[in-house]
Length: 154
Length: 422
Ligand SMILES: Cc1cc2nc3c(=O)[nH]c(=O)nc-3n(C[C@H](O)[C@H](O)[C@H](O)COP(=O)(O)O)c2cc1C
Image (tube, rainbow over all chains, first blue to last red; front, side, top):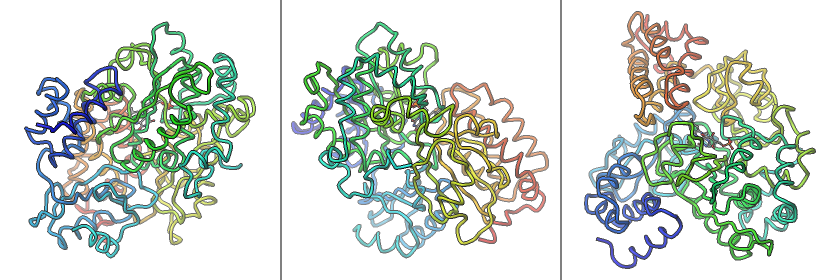
């Protein structure tokens, strides 16, 4: 269950809406930050904090692709492969990540350093190919620049 | 034409309220609050503003419906889901010019009698969340948001609500469901959100760019605004251009600028002197134009006449190195992933289309697969719950119409020539 600081944070979020259900998405983000992913315990904590049925919380959480339903690595690479990125070489970058870092799409490298998520457009099409690492944008990627960027994420 | 939506964008502190005020920011809110709400609405009517979220619906009409509903409170939702692949036009406003949007929302709230606003922001824009929240805080501190704004008796609260990676939440009723904490599945219409929206109250959903036009309408007046760009859908328009052009990026140009000029004049032509093959004019859900089909005014009237849609103004440019079967397959992979699962024609249709396209692209296409694709398309069009399924079907139809030979070649030679070459 959440500690008091987190409970307070969730209560503050709740005050922004006339209905407590609306605080669910933001609260799930908080839970994901606290637990690293949405484990059973994480979702139950949210259900408890917002006084919502656990099944409702699970139902909502399962719909959205940015909620993680299994543990992830220390750094999450979110690489776009939609059309604008694909035509400028994003798929080669997926292969490169596989050979160089041993990380497959929707999986985590053995050393736990990287998870790779294939994204559906991250709004960086003018600077394609692009990715988010955790919450940082990186654009105009090449194999070389990718390697340099990832050096910074241990 | 001087930039308005992208004004100040090169200033590294453009997101700060002080910088925004220096270039005249929030004067237009003051101006609006000095007028009757009905007078401001008349300006919006005169401006001819149409929604920039994709459908081009007249903003005045939507607002009039919402105002006519006697229920209170009313809610103003800004659609910042920007999920249509190829689209990155709202991002510069959100990250670089957040006060323009805030001012636009406050003006809109005043006109509509809506005292509460939410910005539904896609989860993929974490930086924008921090920037918007900081900007909102500044606006509250200066009483440009909150209670009794500028002493004029108008209250308007504003908060950011972060989505979590679901394209369908850009559809306005799915957005409302998502804001209510549920799965983002579209609602049956009618009732329309203007009557029964979020928390069952009258709700106005507008795109970021639409709302960001309000300060300009106040600044120059509806009449002068209506003289910018196309007669039937005036104003400045953000075009976001990606793919094989020399200078991709977001361009603020008059609505109705010719697509050819966007590509060749503004974006410097095809990358590395390549040869143009195809252009998707309004984001991945809009039908493709072949190279000889791009002499077209980019607005909500001319593009449909030419067989596609303006959509979000997301122009994706492809040269001869791009395989159209592969693009179609990738697009369908997207639609299959993002179909919300509520209605059968979309859920099953996108799955079938993706499977057939995948085997064609991978060299396992069968005789009759093109007809099969068109068959599946036929049972989708007009039968899906929301436009997502229609969009997917329209993409396949247009690709086969203009590039049928590529599909045939994949099937007869059992390979993708261009993928092998790259
Ligand atoms: C599948 C789907 C996705 C959509 N995505 C967006 C979006 O990301 N942003 C947006 O503003 N409108 C989007 N729309 C359009 C909205 O439903 C709605 O028409 C729009 O927000 C209205 O604002 P406007 O009148 O200012 O254009 C989408 C529609 C559909 C059917």
